[in-house]
Image (cartoon, rainbow, N blue to C red; front, side):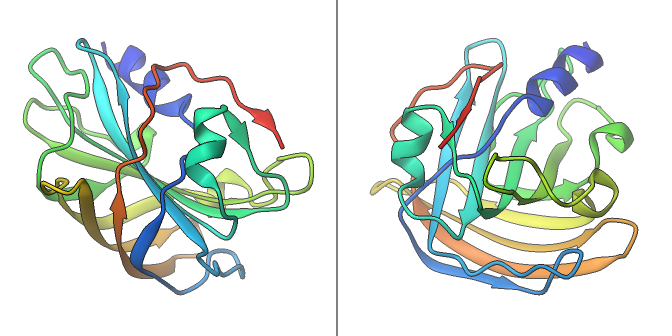
Length: 190
């Protein structure tokens, strides 16, 4: 079960949302992020689901997600949030505080609220320019509030990235992106 859940989370890619109250403070491997758009998306089905949020320096993320495209020459910060269900599968993302861990280090116990964070710096062909050892969030927390009646979700984050121990903080308030995705999601480079 753990391997299946890890595969589902590892295959996710980028998402877009028209956001307000978006902040990114810090650097990852010497790179910063000038946020121009953001997204919150639910991914999965009845068996397994999670929430993904992305901050990006490119506009039009929700539309790109709906078309299953990634942006070349982009910088993005991606979060995956989920609560571990009874069968050790991700079962949504309720309001709460999520512990940031790498997939390798995740302790999967029913009821655990876990998060994965990844910093992307892509070239024009959508190849990541920051190695996993520097781009992965390995500790920290994400405070998440489920979407309200208007579809606005809110989160605040404080995360340490990579072997270089870069600390990044910030927040976002964003509208849910109206798209339904089920892993594995195949993306093309735009």
